[in-house]
Length: 85
Image (cartoon, rainbow, N blue to C red; front, side, top):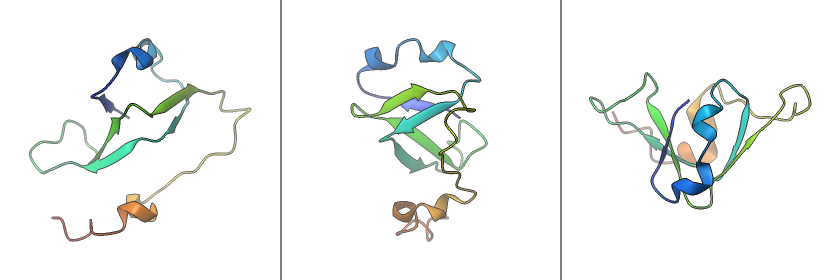
């Protein structure tokens, strides 16, 4: 997963060294990539904001998580995004 940071990089400093770790992310903006501008294989990208919180977690102790197999299962993503090609 990739996340773009536009504001206050200082609060996320050091996370780039934590690759392949389990993380818990709160308050992140999810956007849809336009065809031809996709940096990854995903059609969606995450944008960190000033209020975004990222915590490194231990997956064996933190079993309460949500997995969305379909991005449209998230309520705010299902409104108005289905008509975008």
